[in-house]
Image (cartoon, rainbow, N blue to C red):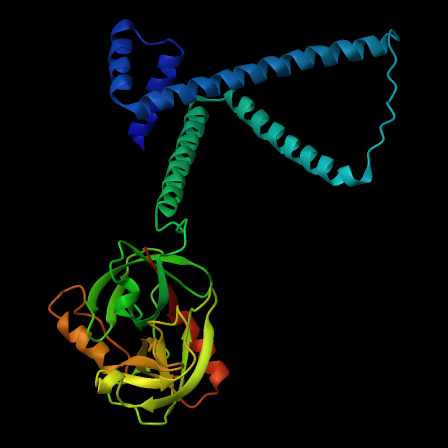
Length: 362
């Protein structure tokens, strides 16, 4: 802070022309080399100019006021209050404007008073110190604003392909279908509130149609505990199931049952499920009645109406096993216990939906 005070003193002496030629030459070399010092000189010059202008206007108004009072006292002029009619709808605006003008005038008057000759050097130095602190705070705030603006802006166009994803670890790891993010240059995810976050693909398995994503956006707030568990054992035939996904811009609920323990042509890594599914549902979690994930919705069989397949949840565990060697994914801890077991479906959905995301591939 002492260095800041010395710098401010040098700036003021330079602006007021109080430096000798050698000092001025040295300071100008500093000014050319450091844009921050140059900006400080410009700002301080403008500040002093504004104070001088305000002081001149204040002195002029004082002279006018004294002359006006003298003429009134001598009876040379008369003052009549003009009849002003203010429309009702503008009264509030005028009152606000008057308040702002009054506060501004008080603030500037305070600054002028501070800079009058009666102020001691200590007081002036303190004011400079406070002004410098305000400038530093403003720069820090602007930097934070710029950082926020540059962090995962909302995409300007719809994604080339959309799907659904869900958290498997509250630190920002998600699972979706591999075909949702296939050949994507960039991936964004959107929560139920419409907030966008940047994500990256860290694993893809086309055979099981499983992809693992990681949210890379610093604005994402980790979830302390996921409400659902991920089941490693196989589900039972006829088991009641439900899913949450994004076939549209808002989250959609569907329910059905497990219609076959294998998928297309007896594929043992998938299930056949009886449930309504549309483009955008791919990658969504398939829950049993206890709120356990038993699968990941994969897609429809185009040759048969209403036939939908789901990658089995055991494939999520296999995906993590294949990337355990990576130190960034070594700490992934998937939930195996469901805290929504035994509660009604509406309450289950309310606790789960914040962990389900719309996945947008570009």
